[in-house]
Length: 92
Image 1 (cartoon, one colour):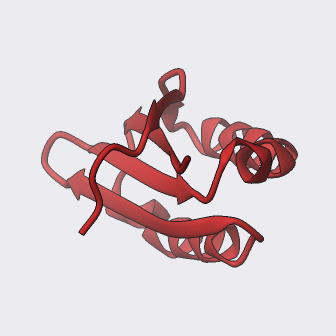
Image 2 (image 1 turned 180 degrees about the vertical axis):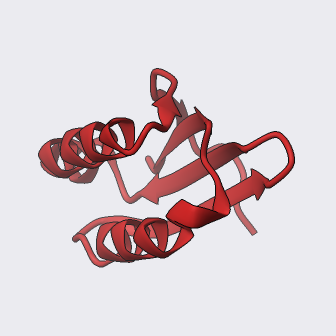
């Protein structure tokens, strides 16, 4: 069953957009990543990201990269809330 990884961030602004594109693009290339979406509000500097993974095994294989990306974001001053995981129920 597919798994959705959902993360929220604050203090994320347009000045980090180029690096976010690089990081999320690299995540998308990982085996088992089915897609990545990031939406943000430039006024509130909040963002929500969703990564879809083929299954839990693919997500677990990417765990080290995810942890490294989170630490890098925090080093840039972005507050990353605890990541949540959901089963994909409906996809069109």
